[in-house]
Structures are given as structure tokens and as C-alpha cells.
Length: 447
Image (cartoon, rainbow, N blue to C red; front, top):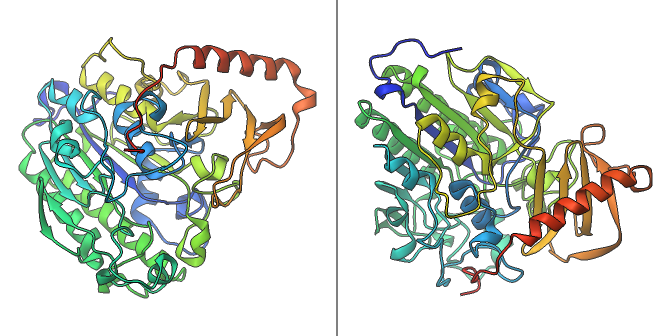
């Protein structure tokens, strides 16, 4: 279905709003089956757009996941995944290399304005901040909200009864700190206000808004308006406020006459942090969680919403990844991908406009530098195992690979390795070809 005529169609270039939440589990939304968490605005997007049941992030923890999302490249290609430190910390000296090209940098070439609102976590030093990676504006936290401890009570205790003053996390605008410690009870609301302001101020030119919410990463914080409102407790309160935020974004697009010229994508950076007990989310029927590369650690909710261009659909017979977002946006904006690097994503714009088409048939699941598993078609082959709760992250190489049919067995209960020798050989050949094109790169996380 083609876009209807719109005076703000920016010569056919759509706007993009990418909403990336933190540690949201596959089973944490109403439209994905949670019995008590109410998400009416997200459910509306799902009902009127595309809800994908098999959509993957590219890493099971924050920093490498975000690097892959913004560059369309696996973290092993740019030093954003190692076997030591898995994410950036306040004392890290590295960051996303300036040689990498982000969605914002790519879209800038064809006249887009871009804003990063929320959690960055790709390097806090000046040379690594969003302004050095194509974004015109940044408002948010440079890393996770549980970092920079300001108390000696220990991480878990501080997170289970959280207060903003327990975490000396800076709130930044551009490259300047404007509040420290950040008032985390106000983060979701302030991010939303900044996002709406950006939409209002850029309604006459194409834009890319990357809204990377801090929540529901622990410690959990919520404004007074949403405190105690959910049957799911504090975690449900946090999701309710995120849902409210999304409603405000959709209203801002509609109020500015941009709703039919804006593709909105909603997804999560990885699975839920289940070791945080009731403060963490749920993987639903999936096995595994954040910190593991089982389905529950890397299969995440994903909704594509574009009134007038996307027919309502629950996509169950295809799979896609956050790696596919950059090439999809580039395709829709009419910008070519640079030919000097390997991309691991595919444009799925044809999938959006013609649901019978799809480009992805494989997915590589890394844990640090180790290739943990590979999916090809309906089958997923494992080379390693670890704690399905994600922590402690002790990898053990399997004596014999294990194979699962993910479509028939999404909970990964039935190892069928002996029944499909041809599939196993096909996947091993795929791995051989993939690894032959990898080149050693300097680790950014170990600096």
C-alpha cells in the first residue's frame, strides 16, 4: 500500500523513530501474552502494524547490542565484543570506533536530522559520544543506570531498594553533564519530553529519532504518576510508563501530520535480567535470558508501525534482526550502503511492502568472541552451553552440537541432532564461510 499524499512527505523520504528499550523480555507486553502488564499503546501499534514473533537482537548484553543496531554489523567486526568485559563501564577508555558508520551518519548524507535521546552506552569519552557518530542532538545517560555506585551497600541491595542517590550516573546534553546524579524517577518523562520537542521542531524536514529508554534495566525507577498502578508491581509500573511514553510519541507524530510518513520501530536490546527476580522481566515461553544466547536472551519483541504503508500482520513465518534496521532505513531513504565494509543486515523493506518476500535465512549468535549458535531456516545449532539465566557467564563447549527446530520447539526442549545430519552439515558450512571473512580487530571493551 502506498503512502497517501502528505504535504510533509519530504520528497518521499520517510521519517524514522526507533524506540529501543533496555532488558525487556519476550513475555513482558500485553500483545506478547503477559497476563497482568497492560500496554495499550504498544498493543495498538501491534494491532495496526506488524508484530514479529521471531526477531533477534545481535548480542545478549547492552553495548555490543547497541553497536550492532546502529551499524548493521556484528560486534565482532568492530571490536565491540570480547570475552572479558562485555559492556562499557565508567572507567572504560574505548568506544564505538569513529570509522563505523551509524544509521544517523548514513541518513545525514541525504538531509536527515537525527537525535539520540536516552541511553548511549557506546563510550562516554568525548570522541565516542553521539555527536561524533552523526547525531545532531544528544540527551541522556552515557552508560547504564546501575553504574557509578555512590554507596557501599553492594549492587544487588542498591538495586532492590533503589534511590537515585545510590548511583552517581550523569545526565548529559550534548557533551555536557547537566545533572549528577540523574533523577532517575524523572528519566522516562524527560526523555519523552525531549523526543516530542524534537519531533515538533523538525516537522518540516526528514528526521531520525533514536529513543533509547533506560528502563526497564535495573535499578527500576518510575514517576509518582505511575507508582503502584500495575498488578505486576514496580516492574509493571515501569512498563506502564514506557507505554505512556510511546503513546505521547505517536500523538506527536499525528498532531504534526507525520504519522503516515513515519516508520516507528519498537524493540529491546536483549532479553530480561532474570537474576534480578521480580525486578527483572520474563522470557515467556522461551529458554534463557539476558547474558545467554539462547532464544530468551536474544529473541525480543519487535513491532513495525507505519499507518497507510504497513498492513496489520503477525509475522510468524519469517525472522529478522536489529542488524536489518540500518539497511532497511537506508533503502527506504534512498541512500546506498558504503561498499568498503561487510554488513550483516538485510533490507526488509520488501517484507514491509510485500509480506511474501524476505531476505534473512540465517542468524549468528555470539557470546563475546565465541560463536555460541547459528540459526538457519527453522533450525538452530548450538556449539556451546551456559547458564540459561545468563549469569554467571561460564561457557562450556559442547562435546556434541545440539540442534533444535525453533519454529516447532521455541522453548528449545528437544534436541534433534541425530535426525537431521544434512541440516547440521549445511549449518557447519555456513559457519565456515562466515568465519573465513572475519578479520581480527582491536578490542574496544578491553581498553
